[in-house]
Image (cartoon, rainbow, N blue to C red; front, side, top):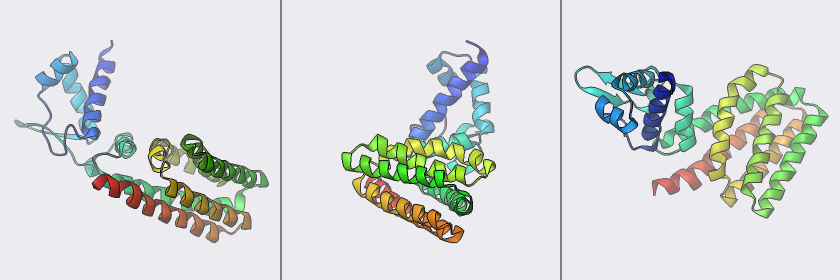
Amino acid sequence: MARKSLVSVVADDLLDQIIRGSLAIDAGLPSEAEIGDTHEVSRMTVREAMKTLQAMGVVRVVSGTGSFVNPVARWTSLDAVLRVAAMGTSDLDVAVQLVEVRRMFETGAAALAASRCTEQDLQSLATQLDLMSDAHLRGDVDSFVRADLAFHDVILHASGNVILGVLFEPLTRVMAERRAETSSVIEIQTHAIVQHQGVLDALRAGDPESSRKAMDSHMDQTLADLRHYVLHSRAN
């Protein structure tokens, strides 16, 4: 295996341990020798893996002392931060921040889509909402999640802003991974259906401000549900 691949394997494994909480924030990492023995790689490979994590802001190296895990707020890699958000383990604030970022993107997308979406877009939104309702009644979480994500994807593309789509794509991947947990709660599904109907009604009216407010209301409900049904239960 090429050295570059080995470096990636070691760096990814260490990052996974940090995200899972096996290596806590501000905790010291094992020595180069220990990491090398664990992964059966040379110290040079370990050193390069540590440089990768340093460049991502995940770890800091203190001369003469060792390497330590940085708080998530100091990470500079979007992929690494989104992996924390997807895991939803060590830093509950990241889950809340994900909704905050979604609010910035999605309220703007809804406002743009109000004046740009076609009849076909509106029909697609209605279809996805029907699929959500049907999946809710059948207790099919996977189908509910797919329809939920597809509903938001239609709005994103209906906004007509290709840059918005590119910027939002990494968040879409994380949302897909997190939705299985949140959408398994029946009350969250019920709230989501009501909020999505409100967004669709506003878009049908073609009113950008009403559409923005409807999506903002949806994000408020999402955040409230996240705190009440998911984060509160984890904290206990």
